[in-house]
Length: 201
Image (cartoon, rainbow, N blue to C red; front, side, top):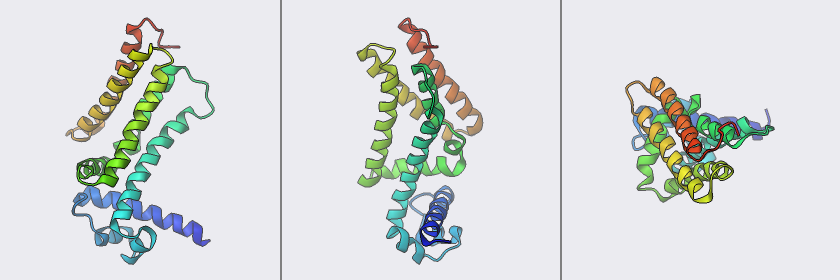
């Protein structure tokens, strides 16, 4: 196998091991050893590919951000969508099976807690928040007046994040994630209907 391909495979294996380790031990107690053991690799591989634990942690968060981005792109690519359809897909992208999985939910929760103390993690999280708001605002602006589009985007982003968080912390996360997605979609339809816009547009 070419070195470049092997590098990509090993990097992904280490990212997957990091997600598993954070889910098991939390971010603070995840170590190079715990990651390397789960990955079945030597601890020196982490330094070789990521320059240490912090580089791997940041790479793992960037991986999750990329998965969120791709989940939306995969849905809208090659389609001519009405604004409301695109808004529904934005919601769906935030509640995919991956984003509801145990390893990913535990990792997001750990990242958010650590971002308060880590400027690099905070910067990455801010990128995620701005992207969500921007995507929502783009679609709302096509069907609502400017001032209402801004408010609707902010409210919907808060609902997606809030319902996701409540579901991740729930004793019945699978049920609650499904309900959360429905509630976010219903909220969008209701906001648009309040302004006399047909939600099929």
